[in-house]
Length: 415
Image 1 (cartoon, rainbow, N blue to C red):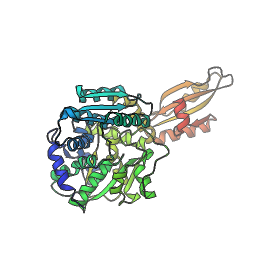
Image 2: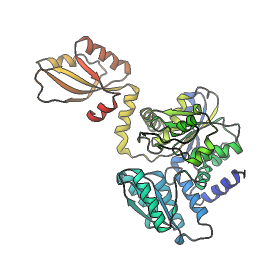
Image 3: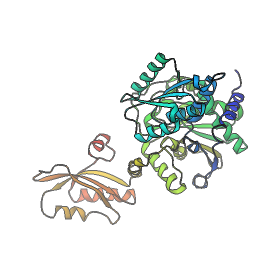
Image 4: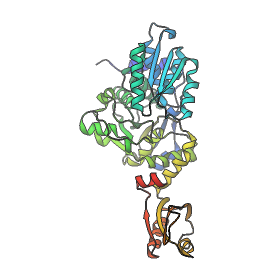
């Protein structure tokens, strides 16, 4: 097998025409928490705030050998970081780009993609779901004879993403004990894995997937890529229903136990901690590697590198992130409370609240109730045990209620 590292180093040299190596920073906060030497590879600090630019640029560079940008036409389907990377690289090369995005793509992402691509890029909004968008992009490629750029299932894209590992080793000056990698389609994780297998075989790898999008773990358990029946889209940068075939060819040597699943709401706690404590803005996928550190029981005293894959976070999502974090931490709970329709009933209920309990939601669900009224009740507190004690007081006082905090269907309908 031809060595991988020399081609990765060539790709890295070429990438320097776009941006300097992203920082590798020791994080004192995380190091103290875990008793380890924790370093963050800050891919959220590329010009497009994610590592995706690396693979898109490298694939374009290889396709255009001996050709001018004016002769090239690239196409991709993406609602996020891949689209922005392709747009930025198209403008760099002066190549034509057509980027297909779902109609439901947030305006912020569309606008950023347009800014990165400038006059070189046309954005086509089509399809309510990504599969429809992808089919339209591939049909367009066949009709126009354009070059399709997949987000992860391409050797040139994988090679470009592997430059993260080359930079990391050069910056650290030694091989780390452990590298923690987020996984979506597998382009980044397979590229880094392949490079470290050659250049730092003693380095152990751990993989982080969102709980609602565990396509790598599912493939490792089955022995081949599988399509997940459903995916939670909250971690949009890593919510992939099927690991790429080429990435899995490299990653299949790992065990399912090497993959750690991060609950979506727990990731929100990590995002808020990094924002409030460290001033680091991470998107949900960008926080994956940091989030699963709490699941690793053998990192004390070790040198650990976490790859922060992206920071494209829309602050309009911040209230939702805070809400999810509070729920997971047990600091906020929702109830459907049956309140007797009599004078003094509300006062009786309010007297059961503890000194640190705060009502954040109080809404009658049925306005015409005669004997009892159903109320959607949201309560926040400073510690989980406070809300447990509140439920005990409610039961002792004879109030009928239902905790719907973890009931996905009722929460979606009512909250």
